Length: 248
Image 1 (tube, rainbow, N blue to C red):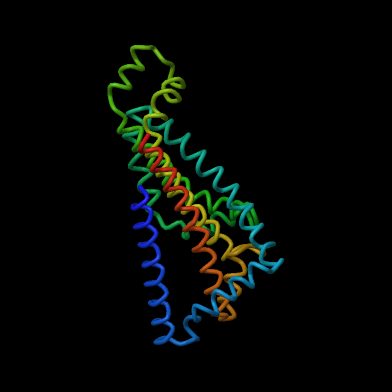
Image 2 (tube, rainbow, N blue to C red):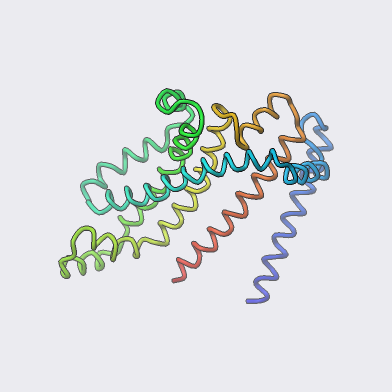
C-alpha cells in the first residue's frame, strides 16, 4: 500500500513537471501577448488570493454555484430514480433526455435571460441546465442496470414504489449515481461560469470576461490556473468517494 502511494505521488510529480515544461515551451514560442510565463502567473494568482475584491467575486460565484449544484444534483437523482423505476418511462424518457443533453446549452441562453432576467437567477438556471442532465442519465442507467434479483425480492416483499426506490434501487445503483454526481458537479461549475460571462456584474466569470476584453493575458492565465486548481482538487476528492463506493 505504501509503495503504491509513493508511485502515485511520483506519477503526479512527473505530470506536474511535464506540464510546467510544456507551459514554458508554449510561452517561449508564443510570447507574452498569447500566454504569460509560469512564474508571473503564479505570482498573479497569489495576488488575487490576497485581494478582498477577488474574494467578493468568489462569493458571488460560490453562492450561484451552490444553489445550482443543489438543484442539479438532488433534482437529477430524484428525476433519474423516478423515471428509472418504470420501464415504460425509461424507454420513452431516456432517448429524449439524451437528445436534450446533446443540445449546446449556449443556444438556450437567450431564453434563460428572457425568463429569469440578468443576475443570480440566470446564473443558477444556466448552471443547473448544464449539470442536471448528466446526473439524470447516470442515475437512470444505474437503475436500469440493477440486478433483477433485487427487483424480484422487492416484489416478493410487497414493497411500495417509494420503499423499493429507497431501500433497493438507490443503494444498488449508488456507485454509478456518485459517478453522475461527480460529472454533474463539474458541468454545473462550467455552466455557472459561462452564465457569468454573459450576464453578471459579479463573480469569477465576470472578472474573467473583463480581463479578456482588455486583453490582460496575465490575469486570464492566473484566473484559469485558480479555476483549474479548484476543479482538480474537487474532482480528486469526488473520485476518492466514488472509488470507496465501488469497493463497498
